[in-house]
View 1: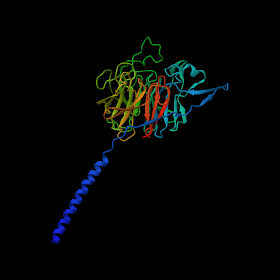
View 2 (view 1 turned 180 degrees about the vertical axis):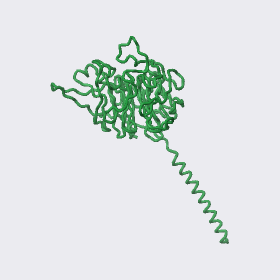
View 3 (view 1 turned 90 degrees about the horizontal axis):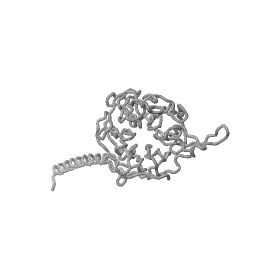
View 4 (view 1 turned 30 degrees about the horizontal axis):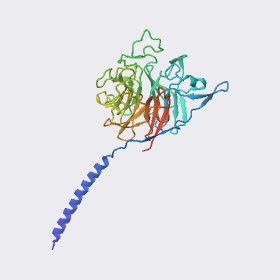
Length: 403
C-alpha cells in the first residue's frame, strides 16, 4: 500500500518532469521554428505577351509610326511593381540607335518607358534632346546604363557613355545629378572626335566630384556605417574607372575602393564595365559584378573585401561576360541570385552561400524566353524576373515565377 506522502512526492516529481519536458519541447520547438526549410530552386515561365504592344504616333501628314525600343540599358521595379525600362533607341548616334528597317516607319520610344505588372504602358518620360544630329545627349546620360528605385520611389539612372548619375522623381523631374554632364574623371584625348573626349578608359579613378562612364547604382535605405545617415549612393564607376564610389544622399563624396587588376578587391582592366553592377544584399553586404573576371565580389559597406562568387556554369565557361548584373530572390534569406550572361545568352540561378550554379533561364536565340545580349535583370515583389537585352536582343522580357 502506497502512503499519501509517497503519492504526493511522486506527483510532485511527475509535475517537475512534465515542466522540464515542456521546457525542452518549447525550446526545441522554438529552434525548429527558426530553422527554415531549404528554399527550392525557383521555376519560371516566360510570358510572351509581356509587355503589350507599344503605341503608335501620327505625324503631321497623317502617317502612323510605331514606337520602337533600341538596346535596353537598364530596368528596375518600384514599390508598386511597376517596371521602368531604359531604352537607347532615341540616342541616334549611339549603339542603341534604330536599325535601318526600323527607322523606315518606326520612331524611337521615349528614353524611359513604364509598365504595370500586366504589361500595360502606364507612363513614359525623359528629355531626348541631342547636342547635334547623330549623337551626344544634351540632358540625360549618354548610353543609358543602370536603373535603381530607392526607398522613396525615386528613379536613379546612369550612362556608360559620359560622367553622370541622375536622380528623378516618379514622374521624371530631375532632382539631383552626381558628376558633370560630358566631363569625366579622365584626361582628354587630343585625337578624339567624340562629343565627350574625357569620357574614356582608362580613367583617373580618383575624382571626388567626377565619374567616368558609370554602369550601375544602388541607394542604401539603412544608416551609413560612417555617417549614420540614410541614402548613401553606391556607384559602379566601371566603364572608364575601376571602382565603387560612394556619395551621400545629396551627392557629397564619402569613400571609394577598387582599382584595375586581378587581385581581391580589384576589377578587370580589360574592356569596359568593370565593375558592371552594384547591389546591396539583405545581409548588409555589397555585391559587385566584375564582368571581365566572370565573378561577383562581396564587400562590406566600407569596402572591406569578403569573398568572391565565381559564375562558372559547367559546359558554358568558354564564353565570357557571365556576371553582368544580378538580382536576388525574394525569400528572406535571399538564397539565390540571378546573373545575366551576355556571352551565353542565359540568366544563371546561383546559390548565394555556396556559389553553385543550380539552374538557368533562357538560351541563346530570338524566340520568347531566349536572349541575345541578356544584359540587366531585376525582380519584383512576387519573385518574377525581368531581363533587359542589349546587343541584338533590344527588348525587355518577363519570367513569371511558378513555384
